[in-house]
Length: 320
Image (cartoon, rainbow, N blue to C red; front, top):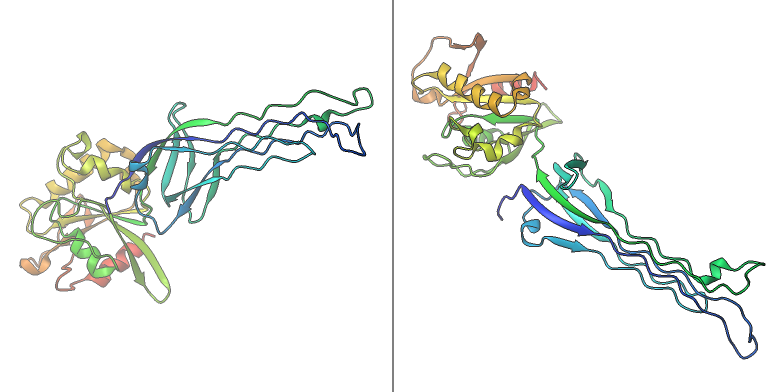
């Protein structure tokens, strides 16, 4: 399944059925009076969040979702049938925007949230509704209310407590696979991770948090280079940033500064989040001296050799 985090669709609620003009004429009731029934309500467009979904892929194929109109009213005071609603499921973390007004309609942050985006039109009143002492035989009825047409933009931003940030091959995928239930693709070449991977990390007895492995950044990611601009938005919701830098790097401080620069250029608010620094692949190099980056202490880890992984989890949870 492809990871799709953006889609544009059109939705329209159904028109309400028209009210009916009718008069009851039966064998023993020759002047039974007005008997036109009301029209049925049009179908509504309802969105529901589902934690089991991870992509907006379905909406990349089908672009229009139009509900059916309500049935017209009938004689003998028979109410028209209401049209069925259309239910659209989206992943938790989906933002729905009105394209024409450039306005956010709803942000799904929890599982099983339900919101009616387009309410179906109400059915019109039949002429039986207008009967009165002054007008015992009305010949008027209401048309059904028109449905609503909206052009929507769906944008998915993954919901995670912790976001892993680093250049390609920094060891993010190996780390998340070592401490969580995530099973990302791991290989010795750049851009192994092409989609954000989510993993649940359990600690203590009954506690856990969600960690997101964001595809590797490169210099210029905020300007659209590499994969960065496509996935930088997925760390906007995280509570903590974990910078991961290869201990074998020629200039560790420079890599950290470049990562900070790309985050700042994309959204300077990201730098206000709590952050920690993990130096990866400590089993591949002898380095006993303490390293500080921008005055911050760092933790050396090795995901393959399981070095300091529990310390890393403890450090992360201390910021939650």
